[in-house]
Image (cartoon, rainbow, N blue to C red; front, side):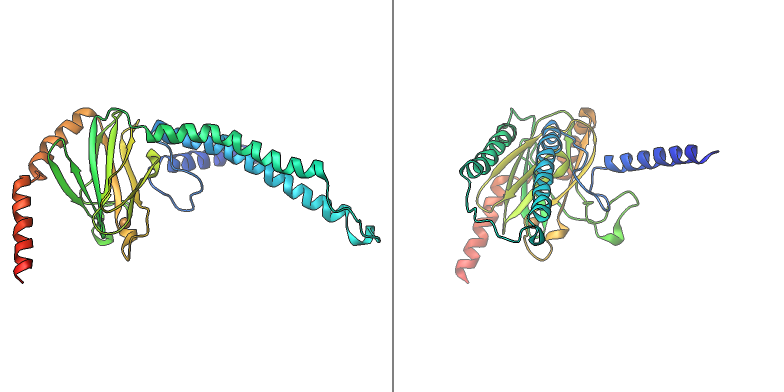
Length: 282
Ligand SMILES: [Cu+2]
């Protein structure tokens, strides 16, 4: 086998390894850029980044670098024994104000379209409530009367396919190609519910409910993390979403309704009242 063939085989195998690791729906070592999108909205974010922001910032950086080099060479001291007395140039000043304004306006159009689309929640098929606690997430499926907590699995208890600091004991399960509305709040301090592959990130604020949505376009396990510095164990409250087919979701729902059945709300109220009374007596 000649050297060229060897090189071609090496390149192809390297590309295959690289692209499959790109498809893993979690951060990977030395990663640059985004995870593989799993929703249309994340696809659009990636498009906006790759085909608008990156070309524009590259062109601006190259232009500024060229100007710097040009000035360093053209106006060097040895070539200009007598200093220039020029202090301003109206045409240039108008241009360097107008051109950046125009660039910002061009960026604004797709950016605002995207923001509006993310903010406008379509009719939801599944609603989930995510509650941030120090330091884990609690979830509720209000329509199904399901409630459970989701704790990170410690390193020593990880199964072989579970990623460190990302896997949880109770994952959220949602059906593929369905609109999932997520209502996000917190019980103690600020947290943030973030899932990079779906292009979703919202602050979890005590006393207030934020809403967001996603529609996963493929099945798989997707990982995210709390994205608001919330205290000493901020790094240990990951988010795991299992996107499954509709049949698998129905099966899960059946089991979950037994396992995670929400207590009667009245019982909760009674308990709370009792606690308050006890505290008052004390
Ligand atoms: Cu947090």
